[in-house]
Image 1: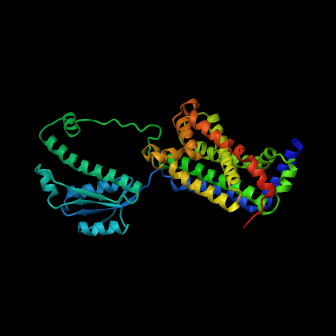
Image 2: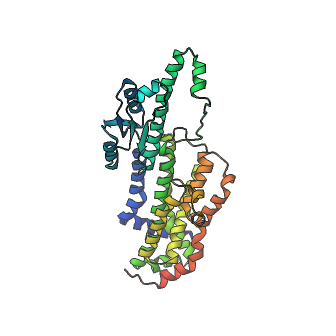
Image 3: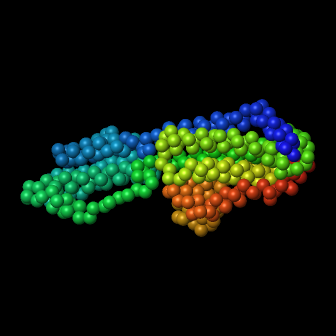
Length: 387
């Protein structure tokens, strides 16, 4: 049996060597994706997003507000507009993401304690830009009123402690757990890149089995395994597993060691999750091909399932906020369980026992090929490839 396994592994290595698609999809593209996403979000947060100012008052106080807005890390004042309609038109043309509107008489009302009203407008077409700019615009509005209030109270002889109490009666002590920098790279890359890896594994697994039928190699493959489908699958996919594991381990070293992404879990946890990720993805790809032994159909289903995984994982939109049918459907995506395992055991540092359900779910995806072994063997022996 070991001799047969050895020959099947050599056979698969020769197929991988001669077919450049394997090298592109198993090594080159995954590594390129790692570099792309980590470089794209290298700063953690988008910086210097364009905003505008409509300053109809044009005093030293209002100009100071615009300068303070420009000093924020996420905001950059790129234009001053003579009217709100022109600023709105610029925002609709995607020239700016938002603007601050200061009406005439703002400074006079501030100094006479008549509570002027300033407005800010921002676009939520891009959620990240809208949320970050809303925070900056709201902060600059608060700072403007606080600065005038501080000067007025100081002129009346109030102490710094009294001024602080009057301007901010309740002091907020904010703690952002695990990712205090609100770094998009930390929590998006660690979901997007593994999701892309799983997508490639889905498709390569189905592609590899489909090629056996396409090039009429399936009978010789089973003959090499003495008609033992389990042995044939192990020998065929063991080289794939080792190559994908090498790529995943390289990714983990790059983000957690070289880039210093925060992680509270132990090293063996990262290794275990990586192994579960690769084996579960291969199991799903083999299972899909076993259900529909067609190269085109199985790869289409795998690609569709892989793309939908990004929405159903819960990183961009929480699963608990979805409709009940979608919450149930989310459990059928391997990426969802991988993401929860990573969040619980690596990101937050809880023991693996706290994520036992997701661990068992990934293990179930690994065992899915057992359900289609007979159908897969029948397809390899009797099916005729139809382009």
